[in-house]
Length: 115
Length: 114
Image 1 (cartoon, each protein chain N blue to C red):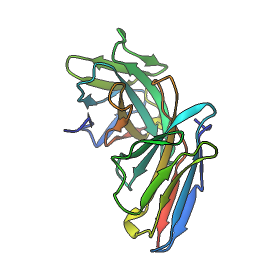
Image 2 (spheres, one colour; image 1 turned 45 degrees about the horizontal axis):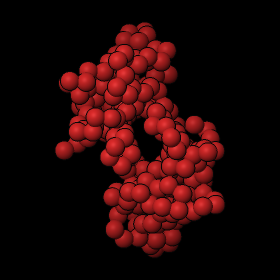
Image 3 (cartoon, rainbow over the protein chains, first blue to last red; image 1 turned 135 degrees about the vertical axis):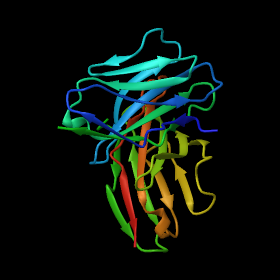
């Protein structure tokens, strides 16, 4: 089974609108972390936001927020007030703390912001 | 994340040659991960190392690929007898010893096999 599933290969959003990128995960480890990374066309991987499995509140970092629904095992990324510079690939990832510390990545979502 | 240094950034090899990719983790980080990204695809885990130990190499191809993280010096991903299918971006990431919050990536090494 896939550890991380991103079902949206590509998404479009109008500039200044909000957009949600979907991510579901699969783990039996009670202790885990969820991450989102941005990969612009230049290729580097940029850390955006983190959510711990025991965190009570949804994580927020500026225009990024993580909609964490533990029972549904989803960790959607919400980008508010989209900007042209947000156009990039976005990867969801998970780290299982008690099961080897390995990081698992989804296949990514390509976001295009339309002016 | 500029603290994770990978070199070379770009490497061109002919089929049958060897490729060596180096990764210096952020200062104080003792966990190193290698990932491979094929064109238009996501990151595939290859290997997870701590100093002088391979912790998880379940993502490494059984032949031609090896990795090390010596006590001194950078982590090295070595690909022997490269083939065209090895052409990809190889990312190294490091993590602090006692924190799981972040994985800091290098800028990647792009291998092209002619």
